Length: 315
Image 1 (cartoon, rainbow, N blue to C red):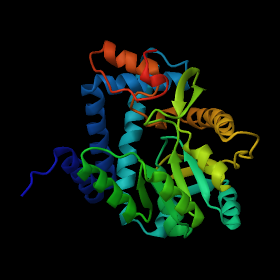
Image 2: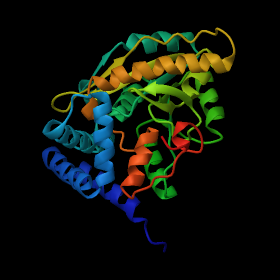
Image 3: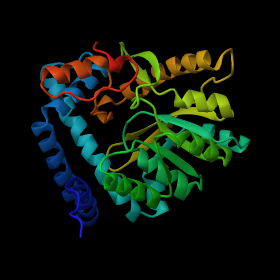
């Protein structure tokens, strides 16, 4: 019998603990583990602090330390909330979820071309996916980053399928799957604040050059699907709230490449605004700007740079 991968085993154990312990104890356990990770992984804490200061340049000293701790606490809540979702009824999910602007999604689905929902790594987006599939009866497809080892990716994929979502790994076949999903009038969710491959559009994001994915704008331009920015936030207590903005202007003006760049630059500004509403709920713990990679190298913790874009070269 093969030896279980320890990381996958840890996530499976975390899911079991989250589902079996009383909620207060599950929260306490998750926060303790998250704080431990923040203490033992200096590079993760450093990156969270850098991202927080991008979103709120006034953060310094003790205020910054508290904000970093709050971010790790928020990330712990994300996992507890997510892992407990399969135990909830659609009525319980609906009761704990408030949505502002859902009419933008409903109107776009009525046209029949699907919706490209663009989100930052913010709050508990899986709650919104469950609400869409189980409460509203909407078909949802999510493009996700492949993670190693494969067993861990399958664990995450199976968990999200359990919530009613269709999962597409980011890769050569993702585009075809996304086009098929939109043709079937799905809401396609694309996390758009991190360019994993490095072949996105160069933009000024929080005052510093980096790249963000070109996929959302490209797909919207090619299909006519509405491109709708969305963010999901934690509320006080156990609640969640989603902010759905009006569709972005994705009309054609000229060459596809130029239109993709124009729309993606506009998207970067929209993502900044959504993140600044609750920067401590921004769960980005990876390098996302060239200077992040430089700082990791100075710490003796080099991180592979994407093959393209400004992250491929030193700041």
